Length: 282
Image (cartoon, rainbow, N blue to C red; front, side):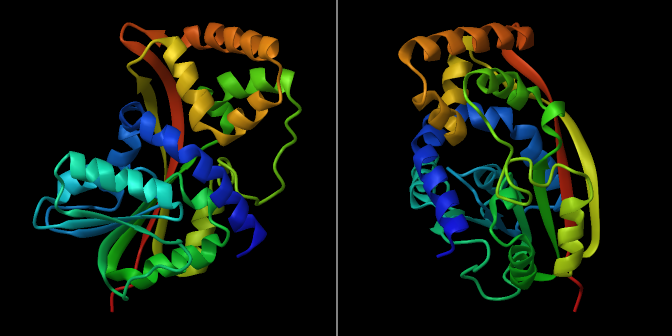
C-alpha cells in the first residue's frame, strides 16, 4: 500500500469514533451540500446510487430517503470503522435500501454500468489517485449516469475552518501541505477538480460555487468540542500542548466562535465547489 494512502487511512481511522459521536450535528451542518449533490447528480426515486468516502453514512442515508424502497444506495469507505458506524445508523433508522462496504475509490468492487449516479462529499481531496478514482466512477456508472463531487473552496472563504486554524497557528507551527498532497483544500482553486474530470474522460464536466450556511444547533462550547475532536490535525496539535496551553487556546477559540452565534446555535458562511460530469452514452 502506498505510504500516502496509509497516512490517510491512519488519520481517518482515529477520527471515526468522533464522526459517529457527532453524527447528527455533522449531518445538520453539511445538509445543504448533500442536497446540492443530489440536485447535481439528478438523483431520483428508484435509482441506484454510490456514495464514495461515505464516512459514518452521509450523504448516503439522506440519498436513501430520496430514492425510496425501489432504489438502493451503496456507501463505501476505506476506513472499516466508518463503514461499521454507517451500518449501525442504517440499522437504527430501519433503512433496508442502504448497504455499506469497505473499499477504495481507486478500486471499486462493482461491475461496470452498475449505478445511475456516483457522489462524494469532501472525499476526492484525499484520494491518492484522483484521476484513477474518477475513471473508476465512470466505469461503474451506467451510460449517461452522473458524477457529482463536493470540495471546499478557499480556506479564507470558510470561517468554519479559519476561525479555529488561525488560533492554532499561534500555538503550534503549522507548515502548509505539499502541493497536491491529500488535504481539505487540495482542490479549492476553481478549475482544478474540473480538469481532473476532463482528464478522466467525463462528458460535459461543469463546476458551480455553492454558497450556504453551516448551521450547528449547539452551544459554542459544545461546538469547540466537536471541532477539536472531528479533526485529526486539531487533535494532533492539541496533544503537543501543555494543559495550560490547551485551556488558553480553548478560551480563545470559544471567544472567536461567538462572532458566529445565532439564536439557536452557530452559523458560518461557507463556500463549496460542486463539480459534476456524466458518462458518455453508449
